[in-house]
Length: 315
Image (tube, rainbow, N blue to C red):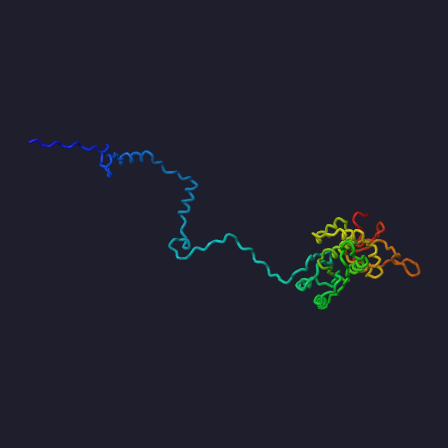
């Protein structure tokens, strides 16, 4: 009896046919196990090479111990670090030292500002004032008068209107009287003010600068710094045309005289127009007696008398 024929061997990597689930034509499947392993071994890139400096950083970090705060097993939360350091502690200062509006030092012993208010009294006490000179026309507040009395400060009022075209003008005689009071060092320290410390105060300070031999350019620059943005051309014209020689006439006739002039640099005294200095009743000329400090003397050059020695440029 003959044995049945053996079926042909099935190839391992060859195509094989299997019935389709949908009854369509059989699809061909290829065994890819051997080919994938061969392809992967041929296309796998080599491991990247770490630069030496990065390798040193990684090695250094790996050698550092983990702190308990930042460790994964620690129960203490990490404290965030501030992005900036706080500023240093400020020294203790008094909060009630508030200067008045537009406050500034004019020269030794003379200050300027706007109308002082109650909150400015504590600051004004530090100035150790002897005189408060106001240029306002209105009645002075009772609170300010009581404060002046409590501080033993004399109060002077030279009320003047502002320079407002076309009718209001500053009277020169009132400005002259105010300057005579300011030129008496017995009234120093003195605080000069109007409502805002800009226009009327600026005109008076401009006349002081004329007495101090400032140039008009410097005088107008100072005036505009305080009166900006409402500088007035009529104020600057008043400063330019003001007759300072009349001030010295008043100083000698009604003021404190040369003995009480402040020690301001380049304070020039022109020759008197009305009568000669030191003229006695009998017509004889008397020597002018002036109480001076060791470094202070009165010299006469080009028709001007100067306090504090010979002015610059004169030999």
